[in-house]
Length: 385
Ligand SMILES: [Zn+2]
Image (tube, rainbow, N blue to C red):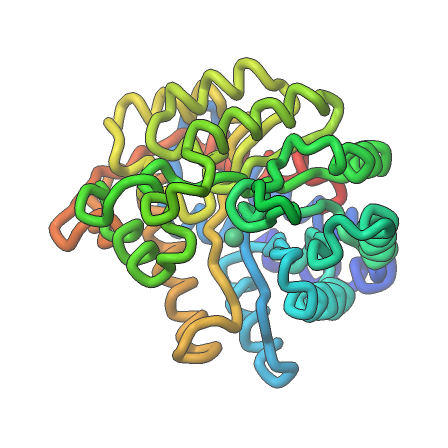
């Protein structure tokens, strides 16, 4: 009965959205109303959800990347997001490749203007000009241009700490005072900083000692980012502690740490930072298998305790895979369905990212917690989404 009502009234909201919401970043007010209704029928404190119910409920993937998407593939891709009732926050990234970053920015602007209720975006800034007298002015100009086109966050990447160097050869770290004016601007504009700083702890271990297959695969393919092979690159704790110092220096800036804030290996270590830095939250992008590697009850209790600070995210990419958009969509389906099962049910799930034989039991989180991590927290930590 309730479901029929939703189906009947949804087209009315859509029409209203076209009139009222066009050009407004993120969901229009009508979109919010129908979204609230979809969750409210399920939000009895403590009750669970089925995979189908979670799939139907409005969600946000707070860590995704549109790298490329041909215009003729757009509708197919967006229809897939509609099917999952999920919106993407696409994080434009890698300032040391300015040409590629500009392409991502143009694509994000185009998709956000065409599908404002499905695509939000984070901008970034050029680092090829690092050290030139105007770099900071140019960085702020790029961010300001992004705001005009609806950007609601700024992404910084692990090139701070691991790639970008000063002429003397020392790595530029994320707490570098030369970044302060940019961070001050981000804070003054009410934007969020999405910060991928450091790498998983396994990055500084030999491949054969890594605890999961995903890390072994990644560092075999990307030896340039494998800290273990590059002793000149600052180590794991230096990355984490430098990021912590950046948080201390900018307590007023909202920061969402990508990839569980590079503390993917231990929810207790992550909890310490969430306790210490109230303006810090984390997305789960490409690190859900690290939660799955840890003890189930401990992870479940952690998620329930920090239910306001954790954002669902995947690091899914459109336009990168060898199989084209069909391959991207196939991976998207597989990833989302597996994640719905892990968070919502207590079914056994195969986790190939850990190993070929790894199985874990789902967390069966209550609906009110699922609503926060899949939806409400992204809206709170990325205002305007
Ligand atoms: Zn990413």
